[in-house]
Image 1 (cartoon, rainbow, N blue to C red):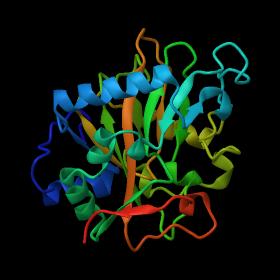
Image 2 (image 1 turned 90 degrees about the vertical axis):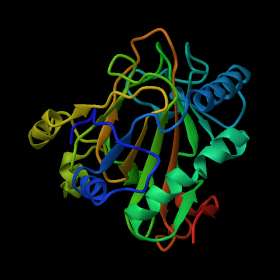
Image 3 (image 1 turned 135 degrees about the vertical axis):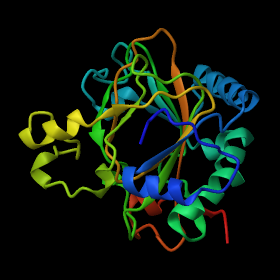
Length: 263
């Protein structure tokens, strides 16, 4: 699939698009959110970042390479994400429940749709100086559901390129069985493992413009570099699943209620 292919976002998915998602693990929709919607979300997110409105996740808490060593270290209060976007402002709530999103997810999972509040449900931020790179990983690595089939819906609130830490995908990798020894303790693909080199070579950068949206499978390997620009990159991410695909009891995935969005 051409990562720059433009797709209509106002109609139901075609059989071709569903086949593309099945094959590649993602679909891109250009201009799905209009400028006014994006600018409003940007204004809200920027204000809440300035106010350090909780709940927040900090780079220092993740321990990724290059992150500040602690919250007290230089750059230690660099925000990685504004958590619980669904309850932060009605603009995020309304976007998460947008029928154009829900209808497409329903076609992809072929059943009624639930929104999980336990995962993603955030405004992702990548800061120029202390925002860390994210290695090749699958979101399902820390999610616990009866089936590993969830869909992330990622909205670019501004330009997303390789220069500011935009997404990279390995098309079709959601269908791969990866031996455990190719993964590190955090379930990232190990850079030094010979078998991973061919996978890395298949990685493709995804360029997004304001209002572009990408749907991607929770088993799809993806990564993101550092932000070498002068501006904070902001994106909105929510995750969805078929309502029969329930979170496992007593796990992080069941710690927050799901929101049923369709019948």
